[in-house]
Image (tube, rainbow, N blue to C red; front, side, top):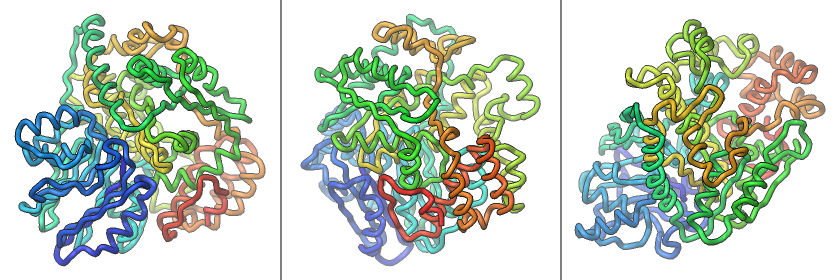
Amino acid sequence: MCGIAGIVLREGRVAEAELARMAGTLTHRGPEDQGTYIAGRFGIAHTRLAIIDLAGGHQPLFDAHRRYALVCNGEIYNYVELRAELEAAGARPLTHSDSEVALHGFAHWGPASFKRLHGMYAYALYDHTAEELWLVRDRLGIKPLYIARLPDRLLFASELKALLPLMPRRTVHADALAQFFQNQFSTGAQTVIDGVERVPAGCALRIGPDLSVRVHRYWSALDVRPRRGLTYADAVAEWETLFAQVMREHMRADVPYGVFLSGGVDSAVLLGQLRRLHTQAVRTFSIGWADARQRDELDEAAAMARLFEAEHTPIRMDAAAVFRRLPRAVWAADDLMRDYACLPTLALAEAAGRELKVVFSGEGGDEVFAGYGRYRPDLFERTFKSLRYPGSGGFRVRPELDPRWVARLFVPALQPALAAYREPVVRAWAQTPRDWSHLQRRQYVDLSTNLPDDLLVKADRMLMSFSVEGRVPFLDHRVVEFGLSLPDELKIQRDAGKVFLKRWAESFIPRAHLWQHKRGFHVPVGEWLRGPFVAALAQKLPQSAAIRAWCRLPAVEALLARQQARGDVTREVFSLLQFAIWHRLFIDGHGAVPSAEEDPLAWIA
């Protein structure tokens, strides 16, 4: 796992110092090695966290004739098979790095090579002969990749923060900011920094010498065809072979690994499969709360750890410990998002990073196998919401924040964008084939919006902020295609989701664990965001440049008073708090990096 960055100029020569500034913001992604390469108008940088070929995997990578240069962030899991095939075709790899198969694959198959790769990756490949740069991102968007198009150059990097040192100005994009407030994240190409774009998942960008950008989509979940009539027995026979291969590929590493273990189904399935395929005890980590009424999942996680004889570490955090991680979490994510789970995930990454470089986690299981309750509304709910909020089959129709407070809090210039919060969902719904069921459409909306731009931002950035690689087998594209294509009746029942996965897992996980009511992983921020902290926040928040620019101060004061009195506007308050910290770091700031624990109030203004 690594960080990549680069520059393509319209004319002139790339400055080594500018590449170094970009790479310097990514050392947390790759603290063990760094490399750069400049060829006139083209320059790339790489920071390395060594997972495979520890001694020989230095990047950039080149072919023997040095026509191609490559830097890669991520893992290509089927590199063993691809390397053998490419060597038989005449390729002569210079290292044992898994990333090198992307280079030789392109040399041999051209753009068709993108479909041959299994894994999570974002890489840049420069063709000296054609004077073209290819930026390639994995199918589901597990690994991040951003670009900024400027008049004289194109910049790219693994994280938004690596682009900022070379941006001529930093301004907030109103539409993306409104999405953050209303949906807890922004999605699509445009990020919250004006002029910075996400490279779409499943796409490759072909950048010419004139800085023209052509998009080549090499994979889409929209191509998955429903398999109505597939029986459970036939599905299991296919699944067992498929998932065993996926797990074997994901286990390829030259370093030890562990599991983030919740009290749910997905991480228990991963632990069970790792224990079956691995002879040694697996290292596991779980987190819960020391001072909250809300029940955590530590007991269920401990039971699974005992069942599979894992070497387990439970962690308990109180409110102060959680909140003191907020500045670091905001810095780590850098693509503005409000997901409370970032905070405990950051603490888990910090603990795991003291002894491991690789951790497995269960992201994607609910999206792929339909585990969420929102995937199975009753007919009345679906019909009512479809009529009142047309365009998405009644799916994801409510904003995150109370509309009454939205109208009061934010300046008039932001209100039109705030009112358009449903556009990403409506757009994704409209893309789905007509022969798909409502369930498949709901899955696709999440797979193309919430998953890459919220859950996977959390999974990648929180871990990488402590130099830990996260592996997510449920988001292998073969698993996604399998789960999305399953008939609805194999995925959901009236009172349960993820039916196929649970039935299959009954052979190695107790039924009581698999079929317990799904609670999800919740952080009790509502319990904690009261008292002296809110009183101090009321003094600090109006001083924020972000709040003063985008909010009405009397409404902010009223909001904080309401939270102190009733505690029922937690999302609204936390959103403003997080935006203020983010603005201080990335708009007003000059590259400051919060430590693992900081006073969040000190990072507001």
